[in-house]
Image (cartoon, rainbow, N blue to C red; front, top):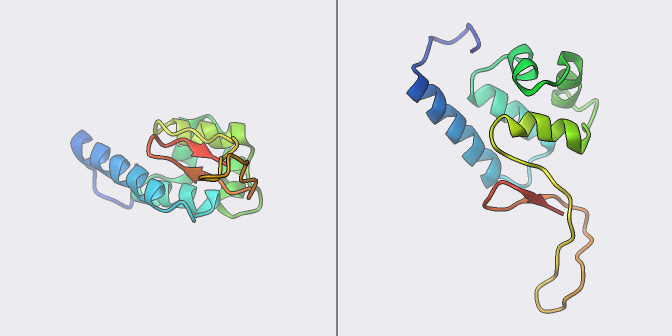
Length: 116
């Protein structure tokens, strides 16, 4: 946990993590970089801590946060995976037409999975 904050109990830490996940799921319009920054800030973590926990290189984490890199699906799954989220790409079906949407957006559903 970022040393700029007072130490929190495990219960408080879990509550922060749950809030961070809820916030990201509630804002599908956020870019992946915005979502990562929000998760890190809400959970009171440093870039180094988040990189270590997710198994992503520190420099890669920095690049994603600062929007120098969009990150691969595999990298984003490593980051989101530490919170039980998964990013995926799939086809959407437009209601009533049976045709694929193809708009290129990634929207998270209620299970935390993203569908494109």
